[in-house]
Each structure stands twice: as C-alpha cells, then as structure tokens.
Image 1 (cartoon, rainbow, N blue to C red):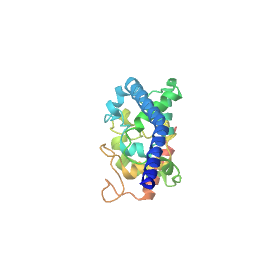
Image 2: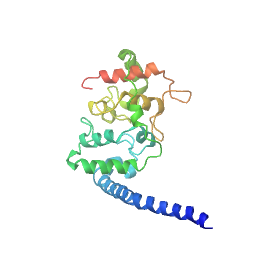
Image 3: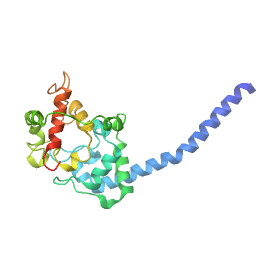
Image 4: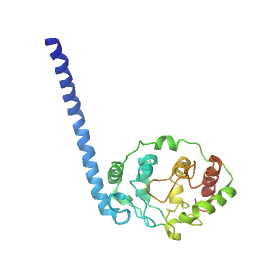
Length: 218
C-alpha cells in the first residue's frame, strides 16, 4: 500500500507545483486579454465591429481564423501602430507598445488554428512577370480590391492590397498563402485547387505578387 500511495502523493504534489507555477502566467494572460478587449472596444470596434468580425466594404475581420493563422504578432502590432495611409485605418502608435501588445493578445485569443506565421514569412520571395501578374490581377482581383488595389476607396469589398501600408509589412508568403487558401466566411475565396475560384498555378500567383510589388509607392 505504501508503494502505491507514494507515486500518487508525488503525482498530486507535482500537479500542485505545476498549478502554482502556471497560475500567475494564466492570470497575466487573462489580464492582458481583458485590457486588450477594453482597448479594442474603445478604439477599434467602431470600424471592425464587435469581436473584430469586420464589415465587408468597410473594415476587415481581425479574428478570421485564417488571418490569425498567418499573421505574426509583429505584423498585427505594426499595423495598429502605423495604420494604413491612404485608407480609413488611422495610426494608433500613441497608445504605446504595451497597449498594442494587449490588443494583439486579445485578437489572438480568438485563434482557432495553429500559428503558421513564422513558416509562412520564411517562404521565398516571389519571382515572376509583372505584366502577366497585372492581367491576372485585373481579371480576378480588381473586382473586389480595385483596379489599382485601392480597396474600399475604389468601391470594392476587398482591402487595399496595393498600398505601401500593406505591402511594406507583409511577406510574399503572406500574400501567396492568402491567394491560395482564401479566408473562410469572407468574400476572399481561395484561387488554387479544384475548389478555387480559379485554379492558379504557383507561377501565376507569384506573377500577381510581383505585380503588386511593382505598383507606384509600394
């Protein structure tokens, strides 16, 4: 009996130690999420809606599962800090780093998929023909994102993907993955594979990326 009780006591003791060690971390996460939610409601919700679900033609969803899966914390924080010049997204750098991190933590709390951002950002840079990319962009992307990638400003339902505020912060892997996979529960559907709106090849997708990078000011 003594031999049986000893492992049980040790196991219980180990659980108590783990619990004691993890509780402060969990409490800190909860506090950050609570602060982030309050800051989001005060500064972001007016455009991005409750729970950051977004509004087509007005502001994108920031809690979309695919978006969170491919977006690094650094990308989200930098976007909030600097805004998107030439769009309706103003800069919020005045909040300071800690509050930007709190908002990001709150958004991250909605994540449903693994964080793939590091691997996606390590993908190779795109190489292709911008002339072919322009044709593809006009055929399949401009309807939502505007002829020059101006997004909502051009009356489209898609975001401004041709602006420096976006292109200067995202990797080619981010754009590539978004085109391939799309975003569920949005108008951005995937463009590769049998279920895609158009079964673009890897080369054609890279042509589009190279074209976007060639836009004036990008």
